[in-house]
Length: 247
Image (cartoon, rainbow, N blue to C red):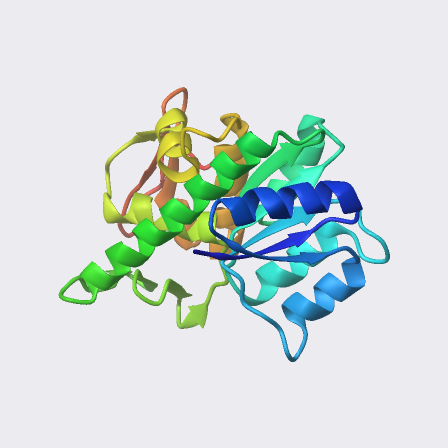
């Protein structure tokens, strides 16, 4: 059973979502005001749910602002809901750290499937972390340190704050240096087969990950683009140039 917070101001929709999730065995808390949600999720007495279902358009404080604030502080899976359906809106939500995206009118069955898939991936990551505690050391590559247990990333002694998807993406690539991963593989592996996204999602996360790692001429250069194929991670030897960094 997971603790899920539903932030949705449409009373009937919030009730239906909450009931659907409760029928699936989850503990659900409903919040219908953006400011209340912001205080509840980021304030001094903040709660730590297992997943957040977050509407984009809310009274007083919008969902994008809430998502941005949460991502500054910690990693909690977020499924964003919105009446908008353009690619730009989707990319914006994903850029700010949403793990998945559904447009209204929401299919309750699809929402339940997305939530189940995300929670399953989170539990798999926890299981992997528990296994890694028995012998797997952090990944260390010339100033970069990735700790799969604490899910911490350090670049040149400075902690880098990554979203759940950014960390998973970096850890997967760095765990297999030199191996090329296609965009479709990364979508299936990290977002799951219930995600109706597009390959641009991977590019967006790669761009954001590179920026956080320091941009051009830094650790970010280890994430290499192979045109028409996908991405790989490589250790950049001294005085060498990466093949390409353009998304």
